[in-house]
Image (cartoon, rainbow, N blue to C red; front, top):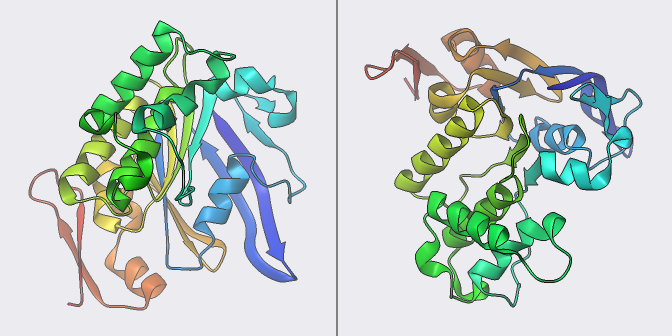
Length: 258
């Protein structure tokens, strides 16, 4: 679904990404991990076509982004960002309906309201629908914007793509797992997700593939069991760890400080 080769990016002559190759299959959840400053969010923004700072094109469904119709692209691709406005003088439902802007001109249709409600149910914010967005906690705002992104991709198009930059920030354990299960269900229907996470154990539990970055370069890109080894993690994070099998699902379980 998504393919890019030789991605490099520098800011004021400081190299942030060097020669990154990415290929993400249909129905795959790729999780990008790495220490602070590894280039994770920059890579995600480049892949999502938010930064035009590289030479080689990125292909989404075998087409470069410039060859997509903008409306069709908005129906097929969406991105959740770390940074969202803290001052939005709208109700929660109206913020979620912003995700439906590609589908109506001035007045939302019944299908738009239905998509917004479905997305709010998936992110557990229905009870907040009439609240002013500015009155919410950080975690509640996070879930509202996730609902907005999900509402944007609620259509009949097959094989859609979503980018998520640290979607679990400010969320409690219950909502972290609820959101990850929602994303996993999305990919199991044939869609694709590329996500940046800091929690290695959650990445190990939910990812189909993991890309581990350090200082703008790929250290490992494979299934979680081959990326999350004691040797690789200790070297990349410069911190001791033990890796064992998760007793629930046999995925890698990483314990730091031992």
